[in-house]
Image 1 (cartoon, rainbow, N blue to C red):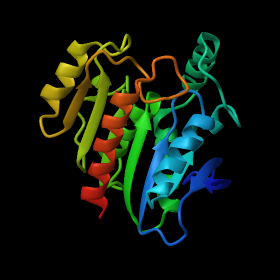
Image 2: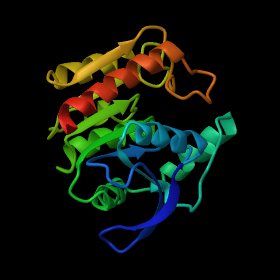
Image 3: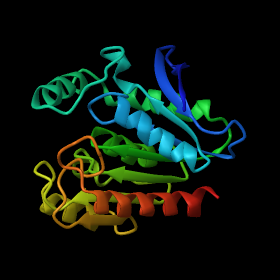
Length: 221
């Protein structure tokens, strides 16, 4: 449905990105990857938003550490993904998010991210003014940056049984961000929104996706 293009960040770095959606789209979405790269699942996520009429860009933010990363979901893949993520600087990640937003021109934009990307989606709300709405799915880095100030409406989606994000952290996020919509999905684990992972929960994914789509519809027009 989509294609892979090259983006240029403000510092001149060239990274790849998967793009999809109608040429005449009036609104856009930046989709931020998990630690597994812009793999089949992330391209599928982008295609789902494209099917709703959005112009979509999924930037390969791992390109600065290693080009062409596409991992699966084994424990070995998790280790590889974490290692690559640790080679990235957060400011460089945000340069690449800005490049993705820039590709979408003057459209009203939303940002959605998953796992590592859920944290980056939060930073998209707090560290840039590019986005009109942000939906952050199980971002493990959100609790550590919970006091940052968002510039747009924010949703957060957490699994109650997420082994890497305890409910005490979610409660702290909720207390720090009373205006954010913070949802907890009972019994759900980390990665509940990915249908290629063992932790996938279809009803929880569908509810979180419905809420995300409604957030974008309300704020992007």
